[in-house]
Length: 331
Image (cartoon, rainbow, N blue to C red; front, side, top):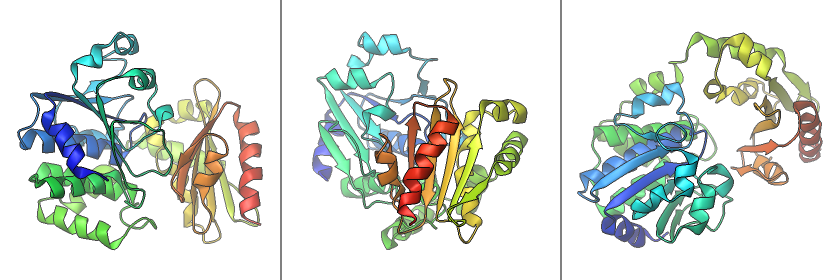
C-alpha cells in the first residue's frame, strides 16, 4: 500500500468526492464520515463531498453529522453520465474495489480521466483507481483509514474516533469474527483513548432498531430449515414478508447471522427477494468453509466467512443452486 501516494493525491486536490458501495454497511458509512473529517481537519481541499449510492440504514444515520448527497435524490444518474462529477479533482472509493457494487456510477468511473483513490480490504475487485490502498488482511476498511491517518500524522478527534470504531466494530461483529487481530484491538484501544464510547456506539448501532425489524426477524426464523446434518441453515425473506412486517430493506442486515447461534451450523444462507424478482443471497460461515469462494462461482464475492451474491433467478431456483454448491463444501 502506497500511503505516500494516497496522501499526495488528497493533498493536491481542491475538490474531493468520497463514496462507497451500494447498500452501505457500518464500515462503509463510518469510513466515509471519518475520512471526510480527517481531510478537512488536516486543512486539505476546498470542499469534501460525501455521496451515498443508496439509502443509509437507520441505525447508521447518527454518524452523518453533516449533509451528504444521495444518488437519485440529490444527484441523478443521468447527471453523472453528463459529467457533473468532473468538478472533483479526486474521487475516493471506500470499502469496495468492485464496479458491480457501484451501480449508476461504474460507467463514469470506467472512463474518468482524473484521479481515483480506492481504499478497501476485500479479496476481489476490479483494477479500479489511479491509486489503491488495499489490505485484505485488515479486519475492516476502517483499519486502513486509521493506518493512513497515523502515517500522515492526521489528528483524530472524538467524532472521527467514533466513526472509525463504528466501522471496525460492525465489520468484526463487535470484535468476535475471525478477521479480528491484535492490530484490530490495538486500534480500538487508541480510538477509545481518543474519545470513542463503545457502550454508546453499541446501543446506537445494535440496539436501536424499530419494532418492524423484530417482526421481520420473526417471519424469517419461521422459514429456517436445517440441512446437511444440521450444518447448513437456510432462510428466506420475500417481498410479501417485508410488506407483512412493515420493514424496509435496510433492516435485513445481520439477520443472516442468527442461525450461527446453533452449535452445529457451519454455513448460514439468507435469500432475499429483490423488487425485480431476483434473489440476493448473504452467506456466513465458520472455518474452514470459505463462502467467498462459493459466491465467486456466481459472480459475487466478499470475505472467507462473510460473502454475498445476486442470482438473476427466483428464490426457489437460487436456493437449490446455492444449496448444491454449499453442500459440496460440507462433505
